[in-house]
Image 1: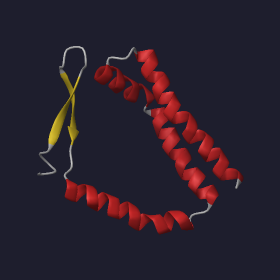
Image 2: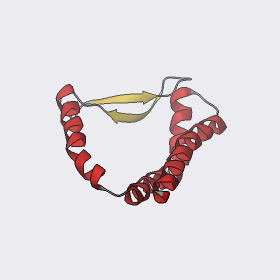
Image 3: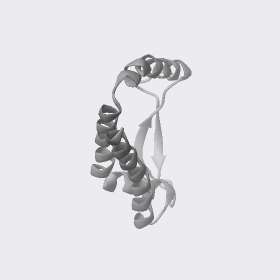
Image 4: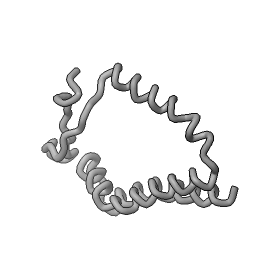
Length: 106
């Protein structure tokens, strides 16, 4: 599978019209990504809880910043009402913020 050409259409649930192209990876690329994650684990473990919390807080901030786009994508893909999609994004955003606050207290 050619990484640059392996794409699949994201389609709207109501009319199956494409709204995005999503990249695909093959097993070799997946194994490579998992290997890179495993190689990064020692550095993650060496990081203080405070610094982990700060990094995860940046992730939560990015989710919050992109909430409208993420919610719109969920709505297009699943046919959910936009308000429901926004709540789904908030559910992902909330636990990230909680974990970040815990990291600062350790």
